[in-house]
Length: 259
Image 1: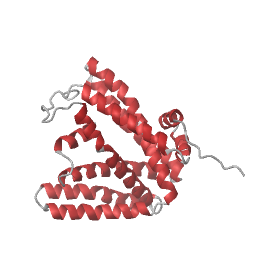
Image 2 (image 1 turned 45 degrees about the vertical axis):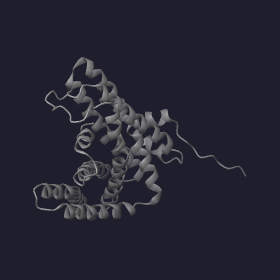
Image 3 (image 1 turned 135 degrees about the vertical axis):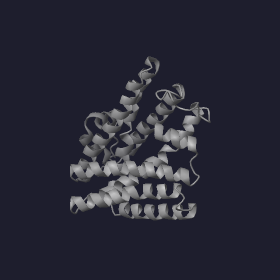
Image 4 (image 1 turned 180 degrees about the horizontal axis):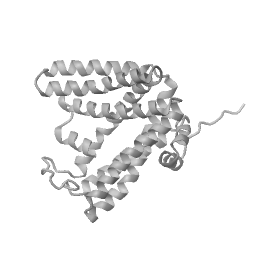
């Protein structure tokens, strides 16, 4: 008997489907070799972002931006991009947890639970910054929140983890594509074009991710949409927590949120 070789989607086909046919991208994400091209697309996005942001003036498009404490050269932005992989991994875990929570039951109660789970780290953050919690208590609260999220994520069937990781990595091709109009906006000094490219990119990821996850996880579109949206906010809260706990410097955090 001959052994069937594992299929590996080509980088170009994966990128094209993530951009214009996210439902079909889900089919490619199921292939055993899908992580490799997805990872290359992600690396290209990170390097392209680092190059663009190190090249453009620090006060574009925000003309009122204060002078940065650290020189925002290529080395600085490579350090910023080094934090993206753990944040991306955290986003996928948050997404899997939300998919698990939202997959069944009455939509109202599931949405309410998703909102509470998403708001909890922000509430902890506000209470901590207002002096209502010490750092150990804040760290314990965040650890408890993460433990609950990881518990939800672990309930997701194992065969879904790799395709979801591959899919979400590959969807960064949308951000890679958006770098072109952003780069054009710099010499034109068009902050409107720059910001529009950022907004369109974010909405495109949200829409494509929702459609692809519906095909991949077999859940209804509104539930997939809310899972992607909630997980995005959870990722932001996690980034703030890393800063508050002294792991991510302030300049790096600001650059991560800005880029």
